[in-house]
Image (cartoon, rainbow, N blue to C red; front, side):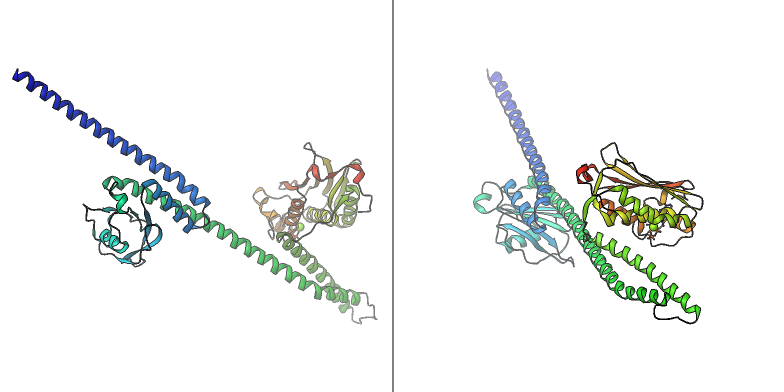
Length: 444
Ligand SMILES: Nc1ncnc2c1ncn2[C@@H]1O[C@H](COP(=O)(O)OP(=O)(O)OP(=O)(O)O)[C@@H](O)[C@H]1O
Ligand SMILES: [Mg+2]
Protein backbone atom coordinates (compact mmCIF):
# COMPACT_ATOMS: atom_id res chain seq x y z
CA UNK A 1 0.00 0.00 0.00
CA UNK A 2 2.79 2.32 1.11
CA UNK A 3 4.75 1.42 -2.06
CA UNK A 4 1.86 2.24 -4.27
CA UNK A 5 1.24 5.66 -2.69
CA UNK A 6 5.00 6.45 -2.98
CA UNK A 7 4.84 5.47 -6.61
CA UNK A 8 1.88 7.78 -7.26
CA UNK A 9 3.49 10.63 -5.34
CA UNK A 10 6.70 10.32 -7.39
CA UNK A 11 4.73 10.23 -10.59
CA UNK A 12 2.76 13.32 -9.54
CA UNK A 13 6.00 15.13 -8.70
CA UNK A 14 7.48 14.11 -12.02
CA UNK A 15 4.43 15.31 -13.89
CA UNK A 16 4.50 18.57 -11.95
CA UNK A 17 8.15 19.17 -12.91
CA UNK A 18 7.43 18.48 -16.55
CA UNK A 19 4.47 20.84 -16.47
CA UNK A 20 6.61 23.55 -14.88
CA UNK A 21 9.34 23.02 -17.51
CA UNK A 22 6.80 23.16 -20.33
CA UNK A 23 5.32 26.32 -18.89
CA UNK A 24 8.81 27.86 -18.68
CA UNK A 25 9.51 26.93 -22.32
CA UNK A 26 6.19 28.49 -23.34
CA UNK A 27 7.02 31.63 -21.37
CA UNK A 28 10.47 31.90 -22.99
CA UNK A 29 9.00 31.33 -26.45
CA UNK A 30 6.44 34.05 -25.73
CA UNK A 31 9.20 36.45 -24.63
CA UNK A 32 11.21 35.64 -27.75
CA UNK A 33 8.21 36.16 -30.06
CA UNK A 34 7.39 39.38 -28.27
CA UNK A 35 10.99 40.59 -28.62
CA UNK A 36 11.15 39.72 -32.32
CA UNK A 37 7.88 41.48 -33.06
CA UNK A 38 9.07 44.58 -31.15
CA UNK A 39 12.32 44.69 -33.13
CA UNK A 40 10.56 44.19 -36.45
CA UNK A 41 7.99 46.87 -35.62
CA UNK A 42 10.78 49.29 -34.70
CA UNK A 43 12.69 48.59 -37.89
CA UNK A 44 9.65 49.28 -40.02
CA UNK A 45 8.77 52.49 -38.21
CA UNK A 46 12.36 53.80 -37.97
CA UNK A 47 12.84 54.08 -41.73
CA UNK A 48 9.40 55.60 -42.27
CA UNK A 49 10.10 58.20 -39.58
CA UNK A 50 13.60 58.90 -40.92
CA UNK A 51 12.11 59.61 -44.36
CA UNK A 52 9.21 61.77 -43.21
CA UNK A 53 10.67 63.74 -40.25
CA UNK A 54 11.55 67.38 -40.92
CA UNK A 55 15.09 67.01 -39.55
CA UNK A 56 17.29 64.64 -37.56
CA UNK A 57 16.14 66.04 -34.19
CA UNK A 58 12.49 65.48 -35.11
CA UNK A 59 13.39 61.98 -36.30
CA UNK A 60 15.19 61.19 -33.00
CA UNK A 61 12.32 62.42 -30.85
CA UNK A 62 9.71 60.53 -32.86
CA UNK A 63 11.85 57.40 -32.69
CA UNK A 64 12.24 57.68 -28.90
CA UNK A 65 8.48 58.22 -28.54
CA UNK A 66 7.88 55.08 -30.59
CA UNK A 67 10.35 53.15 -28.48
CA UNK A 68 8.74 54.26 -25.21
CA UNK A 69 5.35 53.10 -26.47
CA UNK A 70 6.75 49.74 -27.49
CA UNK A 71 8.78 49.10 -24.33
CA UNK A 72 6.16 50.59 -21.99
CA UNK A 73 8.67 53.04 -20.57
CA UNK A 74 8.18 56.63 -19.39
CA UNK A 75 11.24 58.24 -20.92
CA UNK A 76 14.14 57.62 -23.26
CA UNK A 77 17.33 59.40 -24.23
CA UNK A 78 20.09 59.14 -26.79
CA UNK A 79 23.53 59.77 -25.33
CA UNK A 80 26.77 60.51 -27.08
CA UNK A 81 30.43 60.25 -26.13
CA UNK A 82 32.27 63.57 -25.65
CA UNK A 83 34.79 64.22 -28.44
CA UNK A 84 37.67 63.77 -25.95
CA UNK A 85 36.19 60.43 -24.76
CA UNK A 86 36.21 61.56 -21.13
CA UNK A 87 32.45 61.61 -20.66
CA UNK A 88 28.98 61.23 -22.14
CA UNK A 89 26.22 63.77 -22.67
CA UNK A 90 22.58 63.76 -23.74
CA UNK A 91 21.80 64.33 -27.42
CA UNK A 92 18.01 63.91 -27.46
CA UNK A 93 15.70 63.36 -24.50
CA UNK A 94 12.07 62.32 -24.48
CA UNK A 95 9.43 62.02 -21.73
CA UNK A 96 10.74 61.52 -18.20
CA UNK A 97 14.36 61.80 -19.36
CA UNK A 98 15.41 65.36 -18.46
CA UNK A 99 18.45 66.81 -20.30
CA UNK A 100 21.58 64.84 -19.49
CA UNK A 101 24.54 67.14 -18.83
CA UNK A 102 28.04 65.88 -19.16
CA UNK A 103 28.77 62.81 -17.02
CA UNK A 104 32.43 61.86 -16.58
CA UNK A 105 33.39 58.34 -17.62
CA UNK A 106 36.20 56.22 -16.26
CA UNK A 107 36.96 52.94 -17.98
CA UNK A 108 35.06 51.05 -20.63
CA UNK A 109 31.31 51.62 -20.95
CA UNK A 110 29.11 48.48 -20.58
CA UNK A 111 27.19 47.53 -23.74
CA UNK A 112 24.14 46.75 -21.59
CA UNK A 113 23.24 47.40 -17.98
CA UNK A 114 20.21 48.15 -15.85
CA UNK A 115 19.35 49.43 -12.43
CA UNK A 116 16.36 48.66 -10.23
CA UNK A 117 15.54 48.00 -6.58
CA UNK A 118 17.51 44.73 -6.53
CA UNK A 119 20.33 45.59 -8.97
CA UNK A 120 22.81 48.36 -8.16
CA UNK A 121 24.11 48.71 -11.77
CA UNK A 122 27.58 49.78 -12.87
CA UNK A 123 29.24 53.10 -12.07
CA UNK A 124 27.96 54.99 -15.14
CA UNK A 125 24.39 53.67 -14.75
CA UNK A 126 24.33 54.59 -11.06
CA UNK A 127 25.70 58.06 -11.85
CA UNK A 128 23.12 58.52 -14.61
CA UNK A 129 20.26 57.43 -12.31
CA UNK A 130 21.41 59.92 -9.67
CA UNK A 131 21.73 62.67 -12.31
CA UNK A 132 18.22 62.05 -13.63
CA UNK A 133 16.69 61.39 -10.21
CA UNK A 134 15.39 58.00 -11.42
CA UNK A 135 15.66 54.54 -9.78
CA UNK A 136 14.71 52.29 -12.69
CA UNK A 137 16.64 52.57 -15.88
CA UNK A 138 18.25 50.44 -18.56
CA UNK A 139 21.35 51.34 -20.56
CA UNK A 140 22.78 50.24 -23.88
CA UNK A 141 25.99 51.45 -25.57
CA UNK A 142 27.21 51.13 -29.17
CA UNK A 143 31.02 51.32 -29.07
CA UNK A 144 31.47 51.65 -32.84
CA UNK A 145 29.15 54.66 -33.20
CA UNK A 146 29.89 56.01 -29.69
CA UNK A 147 26.23 56.52 -28.92
CA UNK A 148 24.00 55.12 -26.18
CA UNK A 149 20.36 54.59 -25.34
CA UNK A 150 18.72 54.98 -21.94
CA UNK A 151 15.20 53.89 -21.01
CA UNK A 152 13.43 55.04 -17.84
CA UNK A 153 10.51 53.53 -15.94
CA UNK A 154 8.99 55.46 -13.12
CA UNK A 155 8.24 53.63 -9.83
CA UNK A 156 4.48 53.03 -10.28
CA UNK A 157 5.32 51.44 -13.61
CA UNK A 158 8.54 49.75 -12.56
CA UNK A 159 6.76 47.97 -9.71
CA UNK A 160 5.08 45.85 -12.35
CA UNK A 161 7.74 45.78 -15.02
CA UNK A 162 11.28 45.90 -13.68
CA UNK A 163 14.14 46.02 -16.21
CA UNK A 164 16.00 42.72 -16.53
CA UNK A 165 18.71 41.02 -18.60
CA UNK A 166 15.89 39.99 -20.97
CA UNK A 167 15.84 43.62 -22.20
CA UNK A 168 19.41 43.43 -23.53
CA UNK A 169 18.57 42.24 -27.03
CA UNK A 170 15.72 44.65 -27.72
CA UNK A 171 17.73 47.62 -26.41
CA UNK A 172 20.79 46.81 -28.43
CA UNK A 173 18.69 46.24 -31.55
CA UNK A 174 16.81 49.50 -30.91
CA UNK A 175 20.12 51.36 -30.73
CA UNK A 176 21.49 49.78 -33.94
CA UNK A 177 18.25 50.46 -35.80
CA UNK A 178 18.35 54.10 -34.64
CA UNK A 179 21.96 54.46 -35.70
CA UNK A 180 21.37 52.93 -39.17
CA UNK A 181 18.24 55.01 -39.85
CA UNK A 182 20.06 58.15 -38.69
CA UNK A 183 23.01 57.45 -41.00
CA UNK A 184 20.65 56.94 -43.92
CA UNK A 185 18.87 60.19 -43.14
CA UNK A 186 22.15 62.10 -42.78
CA UNK A 187 23.37 60.71 -46.11
CA UNK A 188 20.12 61.79 -47.76
CA UNK A 189 20.37 65.28 -46.21
CA UNK A 190 23.99 65.57 -47.38
CA UNK A 191 22.93 64.61 -50.91
CA UNK A 192 20.12 67.18 -50.95
CA UNK A 193 22.49 69.87 -49.59
CA UNK A 194 25.14 69.01 -52.20
CA UNK A 195 22.55 69.16 -54.97
CA UNK A 196 21.32 72.56 -53.73
CA UNK A 197 24.89 73.88 -53.53
CA UNK A 198 25.62 72.61 -57.06
CA UNK A 199 22.45 74.21 -58.40
CA UNK A 200 23.32 77.47 -56.66
CA UNK A 201 26.85 77.40 -58.06
CA UNK A 202 25.49 76.67 -61.52
CA UNK A 203 23.02 79.54 -61.26
CA UNK A 204 25.82 81.86 -60.13
CA UNK A 205 27.98 80.73 -63.08
CA UNK A 206 25.13 81.28 -65.55
CA UNK A 207 24.39 84.71 -64.09
CA UNK A 208 28.07 85.67 -64.24
CA UNK A 209 28.39 84.53 -67.86
CA UNK A 210 25.19 86.26 -68.79
CA UNK A 211 26.25 89.59 -67.21
CA UNK A 212 29.76 89.37 -68.64
CA UNK A 213 28.55 88.56 -72.14
CA UNK A 214 26.09 91.39 -71.98
CA UNK A 215 28.76 93.86 -70.82
CA UNK A 216 31.17 92.72 -73.54
CA UNK A 217 28.68 93.14 -76.32
CA UNK A 218 28.29 96.91 -75.94
CA UNK A 219 31.95 97.90 -76.61
CA UNK A 220 32.20 95.16 -79.22
CA UNK A 221 29.36 96.66 -81.21
CA UNK A 222 31.27 99.94 -81.29
CA UNK A 223 34.47 98.17 -82.42
CA UNK A 224 32.62 96.32 -85.17
CA UNK A 225 30.71 99.38 -86.33
CA UNK A 226 33.70 101.74 -86.46
CA UNK A 227 36.05 99.19 -88.04
CA UNK A 228 33.47 98.57 -90.74
CA UNK A 229 33.20 102.33 -91.39
CA UNK A 230 37.00 102.55 -91.65
CA UNK A 231 37.08 99.54 -93.97
CA UNK A 232 34.56 101.30 -96.22
CA UNK A 233 36.52 104.56 -95.91
CA UNK A 234 33.26 106.37 -95.20
CA UNK A 235 34.95 109.65 -94.21
CA UNK A 236 37.78 109.54 -96.72
CA UNK A 237 40.72 107.29 -97.68
CA UNK A 238 42.85 105.61 -94.99
CA UNK A 239 46.04 106.22 -96.90
CA UNK A 240 48.38 103.29 -96.35
CA UNK A 241 46.74 100.03 -97.70
CA UNK A 242 47.94 98.14 -94.58
CA UNK A 243 45.45 100.17 -92.58
CA UNK A 244 42.67 98.85 -94.79
CA UNK A 245 43.79 95.27 -94.07
CA UNK A 246 43.93 96.00 -90.35
CA UNK A 247 40.43 97.50 -90.39
CA UNK A 248 39.12 94.38 -92.18
CA UNK A 249 40.92 92.12 -89.71
CA UNK A 250 39.56 94.06 -86.72
CA UNK A 251 36.04 93.80 -88.13
CA UNK A 252 36.26 90.05 -88.85
CA UNK A 253 37.74 89.29 -85.44
CA UNK A 254 35.10 91.45 -83.76
CA UNK A 255 32.28 89.65 -85.60
CA UNK A 256 33.74 86.28 -84.61
CA UNK A 257 33.98 87.37 -80.98
CA UNK A 258 30.43 88.71 -81.06
CA UNK A 259 29.01 85.42 -82.34
CA UNK A 260 30.95 83.55 -79.66
CA UNK A 261 29.64 85.87 -76.95
CA UNK A 262 26.10 85.47 -78.28
CA UNK A 263 26.44 81.68 -78.03
CA UNK A 264 27.69 81.92 -74.44
CA UNK A 265 24.87 84.31 -73.59
CA UNK A 266 22.28 81.98 -75.12
CA UNK A 267 23.69 78.94 -73.33
CA UNK A 268 23.75 80.71 -69.96
CA UNK A 269 20.24 82.03 -70.52
CA UNK A 270 18.96 78.55 -71.31
CA UNK A 271 20.74 77.05 -68.28
CA UNK A 272 19.31 79.75 -66.04
CA UNK A 273 15.84 79.05 -67.49
CA UNK A 274 15.69 82.63 -68.77
CA UNK A 275 15.42 82.09 -72.50
CA UNK A 276 11.85 82.89 -73.49
CA UNK A 277 10.47 81.19 -76.58
CA UNK A 278 8.39 83.28 -78.96
CA UNK A 279 6.36 80.49 -80.43
CA UNK A 280 4.28 80.69 -83.56
CA UNK A 281 3.05 78.36 -86.29
CA UNK A 282 6.03 78.18 -88.67
CA UNK A 283 5.93 77.09 -92.26
CA UNK A 284 8.85 74.68 -92.28
CA UNK A 285 9.72 74.83 -95.93
CA UNK A 286 9.99 78.63 -95.70
CA UNK A 287 11.99 78.75 -92.47
CA UNK A 288 14.35 75.96 -93.44
CA UNK A 289 14.47 77.03 -97.07
CA UNK A 290 15.75 80.55 -96.19
CA UNK A 291 18.39 79.16 -93.82
CA UNK A 292 19.60 76.67 -96.42
CA UNK A 293 19.77 79.49 -98.95
CA UNK A 294 21.82 81.53 -96.49
CA UNK A 295 24.36 78.73 -96.05
CA UNK A 296 24.52 77.60 -99.68
CA UNK A 297 27.28 80.05 -100.68
CA UNK A 298 29.39 79.03 -97.71
CA UNK A 299 28.96 75.35 -98.68
CA UNK A 300 29.88 76.15 -102.27
CA UNK A 301 33.03 78.00 -101.14
CA UNK A 302 34.04 74.78 -99.36
CA UNK A 303 33.42 72.72 -102.52
CA UNK A 304 30.28 71.06 -101.09
CA UNK A 305 26.80 70.42 -102.47
CA UNK A 306 23.98 71.40 -100.13
CA UNK A 307 20.59 69.86 -100.90
CA UNK A 308 17.22 70.22 -99.20
CA UNK A 309 14.45 67.69 -99.65
CA UNK A 310 11.32 68.93 -97.91
CA UNK A 311 7.95 67.34 -98.76
CA UNK A 312 5.33 69.86 -99.89
CA UNK A 313 2.68 68.66 -97.42
CA UNK A 314 4.63 69.30 -94.20
CA UNK A 315 2.42 70.56 -91.35
CA UNK A 316 3.25 73.86 -89.66
CA UNK A 317 5.47 73.62 -86.60
CA UNK A 318 4.68 75.41 -83.33
CA UNK A 319 8.15 76.78 -82.60
CA UNK A 320 10.40 79.81 -82.06
CA UNK A 321 11.58 81.14 -85.40
CA UNK A 322 14.96 82.41 -84.16
CA UNK A 323 15.66 79.14 -82.33
CA UNK A 324 14.75 77.11 -85.43
CA UNK A 325 17.12 79.14 -87.57
CA UNK A 326 19.88 78.94 -85.02
CA UNK A 327 19.54 75.14 -84.81
CA UNK A 328 19.74 74.81 -88.58
CA UNK A 329 22.68 77.24 -88.89
CA UNK A 330 24.65 75.46 -86.16
CA UNK A 331 24.06 72.03 -87.73
CA UNK A 332 24.81 73.22 -91.24
CA UNK A 333 27.97 75.07 -90.22
CA UNK A 334 29.21 71.89 -88.51
CA UNK A 335 28.41 69.84 -91.61
CA UNK A 336 30.31 72.37 -93.75
CA UNK A 337 33.22 72.56 -91.32
CA UNK A 338 33.69 68.82 -90.98
CA UNK A 339 33.08 67.65 -94.57
CA UNK A 340 36.03 67.60 -96.99
CA UNK A 341 35.68 69.13 -100.45
CA UNK A 342 33.55 67.19 -102.89
CA UNK A 343 31.18 66.03 -100.15
CA UNK A 344 27.41 66.38 -99.83
CA UNK A 345 25.09 67.79 -97.23
CA UNK A 346 21.43 66.84 -97.19
CA UNK A 347 18.68 68.57 -95.22
CA UNK A 348 15.45 66.56 -94.94
CA UNK A 349 12.18 66.52 -93.05
CA UNK A 350 9.70 63.69 -92.67
CA UNK A 351 6.76 62.56 -90.56
CA UNK A 352 7.70 59.96 -88.01
CA UNK A 353 5.75 56.78 -87.24
CA UNK A 354 4.89 58.02 -83.72
CA UNK A 355 3.11 61.08 -85.18
CA UNK A 356 5.95 63.58 -84.72
CA UNK A 357 8.36 65.09 -87.21
CA UNK A 358 12.03 64.51 -87.87
CA UNK A 359 14.29 67.18 -89.25
CA UNK A 360 17.71 65.94 -90.27
CA UNK A 361 21.05 67.29 -91.44
CA UNK A 362 23.31 64.61 -92.92
CA UNK A 363 26.81 64.99 -94.29
CA UNK A 364 29.43 62.77 -95.91
CA UNK A 365 32.19 64.21 -93.73
CA UNK A 366 34.87 62.90 -91.42
CA UNK A 367 32.39 61.64 -88.79
CA UNK A 368 32.66 61.46 -84.99
CA UNK A 369 34.27 58.49 -83.22
CA UNK A 370 31.77 56.58 -81.07
CA UNK A 371 33.51 57.44 -77.81
CA UNK A 372 33.16 61.18 -78.62
CA UNK A 373 29.50 61.10 -79.58
CA UNK A 374 28.14 61.80 -76.07
CA UNK A 375 30.93 64.26 -75.19
CA UNK A 376 30.37 66.59 -78.16
CA UNK A 377 26.82 67.29 -76.96
CA UNK A 378 28.14 68.92 -73.77
CA UNK A 379 28.89 72.67 -73.71
CA UNK A 380 32.48 73.68 -74.50
CA UNK A 381 33.46 70.15 -75.52
CA UNK A 382 34.97 69.39 -78.89
CA UNK A 383 35.61 66.00 -80.39
CA UNK A 384 38.73 64.67 -82.05
CA UNK A 385 37.18 65.37 -85.46
CA UNK A 386 37.68 69.04 -84.69
CA UNK A 387 41.45 68.66 -84.40
CA UNK A 388 41.44 66.28 -87.38
CA UNK A 389 39.73 68.84 -89.58
CA UNK A 390 42.03 71.56 -88.26
CA UNK A 391 38.95 73.62 -87.40
CA UNK A 392 38.60 76.02 -84.53
CA UNK A 393 35.43 76.55 -82.50
CA UNK A 394 34.09 76.92 -79.02
CA UNK A 395 32.23 73.64 -78.70
CA UNK A 396 28.90 75.35 -78.08
CA UNK A 397 27.09 74.76 -81.39
CA UNK A 398 25.74 71.25 -80.80
CA UNK A 399 24.97 71.75 -77.10
CA UNK A 400 22.92 74.82 -78.00
CA UNK A 401 20.97 72.81 -80.56
CA UNK A 402 20.36 70.09 -77.96
CA UNK A 403 19.17 72.64 -75.37
CA UNK A 404 16.93 74.42 -77.91
CA UNK A 405 15.26 71.26 -79.23
CA UNK A 406 14.62 70.15 -75.63
CA UNK A 407 12.95 73.50 -74.97
CA UNK A 408 10.64 72.50 -77.83
CA UNK A 409 9.79 69.21 -76.02
CA UNK A 410 11.87 67.35 -78.59
CA UNK A 411 15.21 65.58 -78.63
CA UNK A 412 18.40 65.35 -80.63
CA UNK A 413 19.97 62.12 -81.82
CA UNK A 414 23.32 61.80 -83.51
CA UNK A 415 24.54 58.95 -85.69
CA UNK A 416 27.99 59.01 -87.12
CA UNK A 417 30.66 56.79 -88.60
CA UNK A 418 34.24 58.01 -88.84
CA UNK A 419 35.16 58.47 -92.49
CA UNK A 420 31.56 58.10 -93.70
CA UNK A 421 29.59 60.99 -92.29
CA UNK A 422 27.29 62.30 -89.62
CA UNK A 423 23.53 62.65 -89.36
CA UNK A 424 21.88 64.77 -86.70
CA UNK A 425 18.14 64.21 -86.23
CA UNK A 426 15.90 66.70 -84.50
CA UNK A 427 12.72 65.05 -83.32
CA UNK A 428 9.61 67.21 -82.69
CA UNK A 429 6.66 65.51 -80.95
CA UNK A 430 3.19 65.45 -82.48
CA UNK A 431 2.00 68.07 -79.97
CA UNK A 432 4.23 70.61 -81.81
CA UNK A 433 2.58 70.04 -85.19
CA UNK A 434 -0.25 72.40 -86.05
CA UNK A 435 -3.47 71.67 -87.92
CA UNK A 436 -3.25 73.17 -91.42
CA UNK A 437 -5.38 76.25 -90.60
CA UNK A 438 -2.72 77.47 -88.11
CA UNK A 439 0.00 77.57 -90.75
CA UNK A 440 1.59 80.99 -91.14
CA UNK A 441 2.54 82.11 -94.57
CA UNK A 442 5.36 84.46 -93.68
CA UNK A 443 8.66 84.59 -95.44
CA UNK A 444 10.48 82.78 -92.61
N1 LIG B 1 28.93 67.14 -88.71
C1 LIG B 1 30.00 66.84 -87.94
N2 LIG B 1 30.96 66.01 -88.39
C2 LIG B 1 32.01 65.68 -87.62
N3 LIG B 1 32.21 66.13 -86.35
C3 LIG B 1 31.27 66.96 -85.85
C4 LIG B 1 30.13 67.35 -86.60
N4 LIG B 1 29.37 68.16 -85.82
C5 LIG B 1 30.03 68.27 -84.64
N5 LIG B 1 31.16 67.55 -84.65
C6 LIG B 1 32.12 67.39 -83.54
O1 LIG B 1 31.46 67.82 -82.37
C7 LIG B 1 32.19 68.87 -81.76
C8 LIG B 1 31.23 69.81 -81.08
O2 LIG B 1 30.50 70.51 -82.05
P1 LIG B 1 30.01 71.97 -81.73
O3 LIG B 1 29.22 72.47 -82.86
O4 LIG B 1 29.35 71.92 -80.39
O5 LIG B 1 31.38 72.77 -81.53
P2 LIG B 1 32.35 73.41 -82.60
O6 LIG B 1 31.74 73.31 -83.96
O7 LIG B 1 33.68 72.78 -82.41
O8 LIG B 1 32.39 74.90 -82.11
P3 LIG B 1 31.27 76.03 -82.29
O9 LIG B 1 30.10 75.37 -82.93
O10 LIG B 1 30.98 76.48 -80.90
O11 LIG B 1 31.91 77.04 -83.14
C9 LIG B 1 33.02 69.46 -82.83
O12 LIG B 1 34.18 70.08 -82.30
C10 LIG B 1 33.35 68.24 -83.68
O13 LIG B 1 34.43 67.54 -83.13
MG1 LIG C 1 29.78 73.96 -84.34
